[in-house]
Image 1 (cartoon, one colour):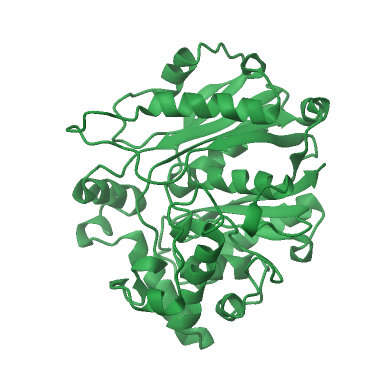
Image 2 (cartoon, rainbow, N blue to C red):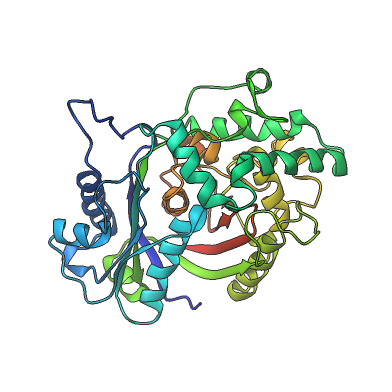
Length: 397
């Protein structure tokens, strides 16, 4: 990675319930909502629609009626492209892979401006249909799926092991959810914004022990468009932007739970990906001002923050409880509100992270603003962080 690629603009739908049921008189149409975001993002970037060369979409949920969504959207936008028009799939990493593909288009000189974009509609789909689809995607159909082994189950296993190994507690882990809600209260596109205390979190019904309702993500709809551009294009607009300094990817060759005995809470793929990103950026964890991490559950935020050296191994829970990962603390994490409060429309979730980075760099994050935000980090995962994609970004004013 060189320093010649920028995030220049973006737009996002507030996370919530947008998908209608077949009985509803009025429906929100996915292509109409996404097309408006494209125009809003281009305005935010100070560019024209005709500047776009590539459209890199996240693959829509299987419930989307319009198939081959990417070429349909190119038609709906009346937008000829000489770069790429394509869809990307990689489970929770899908949006980050779409972003990286857009970055690659610019890095390789195949596009001056590329969009990473997508929409995730699922909230009106029955829980049964959604879970059957999710288990077949996230688990081994010969082993995990027949026994109903879901992502929340293995995250709960992580939590039990972490508490045992490092002397942490349910209260420490739950403080992550409290911290994220405090951030989300200041985020107008967050799904859940009502104030929440530690007692509120601990009082909720269990989902998979020791994780309760507020410590896991709810289902949600969302849509995002991120404008990626050659840095010369970015400079010519006169706008501030986020320069991509480093990226790192690692896949441990396992699908969700590694059948080879290992330290399942070390998040080795995140560590390897982070090391590559730091090396490419010429930085270390001490240079990071804030991090927007992909963490569906509270324990995941703790473990990935440790794997990326943002906090010391075994101290992630303590740091959250002490306020060190809150805005105003030593290393603010998930300033958007995270996946528990900002929301988790999975096939576009990671794109919201780049929106948050740009908001922080442009000093438009309001009550969640990190003072002097100049270097940001994002992460995305597959499975139990069996694979990770990490980006390091720098503010250019």
